[in-house]
Amino acid sequence: AQRVTQPEKLLSVFKGAPVELKCNYSYSGSPELFWYVQYSRQRLQLLLRHISRESIKGFTADLNKGETSFHLKKPFAQEEDSAMYYCALSGLSGGYQKVTFGTGTKLQVIP
Amino acid sequence: DTGVSQDPRHKITKRGQNVTFRCDPISEHNRLYWYRQTLGQGPEFLTYFQNEAQLEKSRLLSDRFSAERPKGSFSTLEIQRTEQGDSAMYLCASSTDRALGTDTQYFGPGTRLTVL
Image: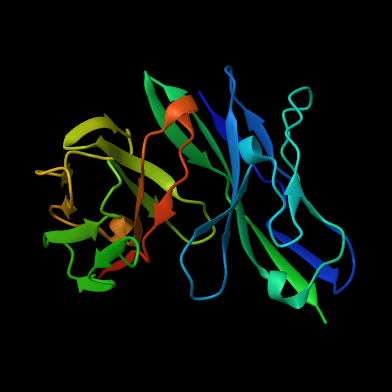
């Protein structure tokens, strides 16, 4: 079974402060991890994926297999970062790729 | 192609009625997913198509739910004898299979179902 845990429902930070959104996962194989973001009144969209090791909008995330974590980080929060953030895991389940989402963390950047 | 589209965007129905939702994926995508999202939760997987074949179906999907993708393009999700617990946002996503199993999904805007 695969599981994704986002322990924080809400994270409030001041503009310019560092941000860390936590994500832990449970999966027996080699996972593919993603972060999706949903801005107000917009559809869910991919922010970044671990396999590409890219930085999008200043956000980065490193897969730590030892701690089974994929935390999302940004050194300086901006007001436009306020949104819902979902961590997701894609893995084989019953022979097919299955994507499991966490419950999400609402990031609120205070001006 | 403007991305994944879903129709209708909102549906209000009375308990016991049947409803059908449609999803049009990105044209070159062969994978299509249905999710359900309730307040305060992340998307929950319902079912998955590779082309026209329905490859996986969640235990969340009771016998009242059925999904089709007859020609490997658009998909429909039908809920029969709706119950108030079916009220949720129903999301569709599509992707294309590539090497290494990378599965970036592109989401539609969702259909919000309210069962009275």
